[in-house]
Image 1: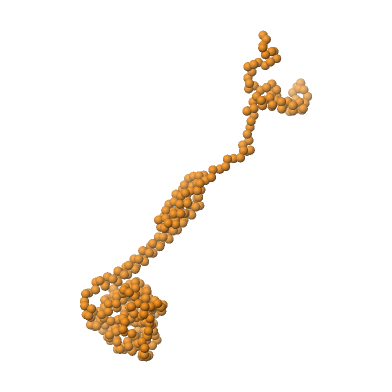
Image 2 (image 1 turned 120 degrees about the vertical axis):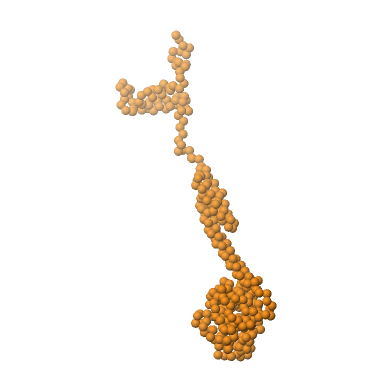
Length: 355
């Protein structure tokens, strides 16, 4: 039977994926010139082999071109990495630390949360160092704010308590007439000395209130200058400084100073001081003799070597007679540092007694 395509034509239904004959010949056996030549093989012809391979590849390329396309992965640049975003909590921890005590506490919370967020998703978030800085800053500022608030509360409590302690005895004072003679209001935990009707003790008394030494000159003192010399010698032996206070009875400002002596502020201001209280009515002539002013009282005087006043102030240097007002003035005065005054110091004219 004859075919329409002729005896030399290939069958029309040949598989299209079957490689051409030239390529089959190449694939069937080893290429010429490689290894031992087969029996009855024609001599190796390098030129013919070189011509055969390109021809076969060209024919195969037309039939199966998609199968031979290769792509090297190292020749294509990798895609750029995705940029990590800065953690908002890390930024908030640093900013919140600048907004007072509550902001410092919030900075601790934000910094801790930012660190957790970055540790859980390090490929998406950055700013771990910033979160750590905000956390540390929040801890530091929280400690500072706590110390400052605690110190402020302590100062307020101390001053308020001192003022209340000074005001309570004043409110509980006996409503006796101002003209009636009455002894000084006793200081805390100290028994009042025996007193004459004028408020002056019969005998000189010496007592201590905290670190303050108090001497009340009694009616048994015959010469004021001699007693002051004695008190100064005893004070020097104990490392104390003599401060003379002129007082009278009745004298409400004097009693205000008496009530304030037990206050911590006064104890600090008059540490290592011997306060010698002298009644201006009982020792009027003696005070005039050593040139101690009597017109304004209570008066406070530092003595010179000859027992005359070297410097002096009076209760007009402060307002209300409470420890908060008195302590800064007397503390600076006994140390020679009270320079700005309401009333300048003017010693009395004339010559006094010299020892």
